[in-house]
Length: 450
Image 1 (cartoon, one colour):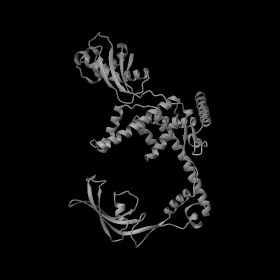
Image 2 (image 1 turned 180 degrees about the vertical axis):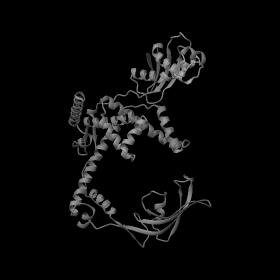
Image 3 (image 1 turned 60 degrees about the vertical axis):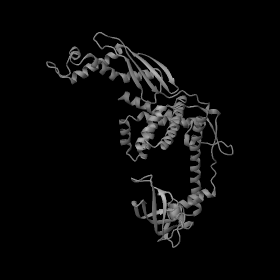
């Protein structure tokens, strides 16, 4: 097989492929076998119809068409590997020459395939980059915030005889009308002022309202058949409650934790805050690295891949005609694809390898996010042919971690920040690799003895 590549755009190429008759011959033979099992010819058992009879009854062109359709994907895949292309979409294939339409014609199969590919980009040296992340210093306010959150978990709601204010829980009856038609109604719903999780304008309408009082406001409906339409909402407060928090003392510490004193509890909350801030440093460093690299490298994105993703997204939401949302989703898709191209290139540059244990850890973690049994999740992903995509995701994450080991990460004061707890270290990787090799050697030895 011979193939050649023509670059049409930075993210699009045209493959020209020539397949010899000998290379196509196995597909032709399989086509005869398949057709022989399908056709009924008097005097011959199914599956035993000779090729010459199939040529007479079905026609040689139908056989060749079957063979070409069967073999095309394999020839295309071989050409992609041969030319080290990285397709990012489905190819547009055109067959330009077909051999063997008559017996004895042993010419070549010619076809072209236009496909969008991952562009070639050159990344800057990682060891010359410096990333500045936030400090880990934990303030008394940080501790108080965590303590207040804990107190809220053990607080109680108590009715109050005063106008509602920020943070209060209000029991409401609500009705929405458009013109003279009532389109929605709820009764006895508890709503916390400031949560902002119902209707725009509801927080303002309830603030200052006492139990038994009613008010109205205009808003846009966010659900139901009339979603997006303007409506008049009438809301009545049937009760106002405030959350009363327990006192900050040793008794509360014993109630809310395993500690005996409030000082011990506060010390633990300070440590928790420090761990979270340290973890946030790793996340911030990761995001800063991606931002830094994408700002220094021009990364063209395949327009067709973006368009297909945008169409899929909008179709799933039933918003194909929403041009404003389309522009928003398009920008998000371009950014996501640009980051993917960057990280895939980074993974190749760092020669990232994904072990079975790393893939398994990722799949188990993903199964928890979907609330599925790990074995069921892995079988489903495998059946859908998504394992290669999962491997790529692990490789991207691993590439980021390896990259962060090469750059300089400092805090606001310029002090070096140790992220090894979150991104590992070369020494740890070497130890794991050595252990895996030792385990594999033991398995091989056991197999030989068996």
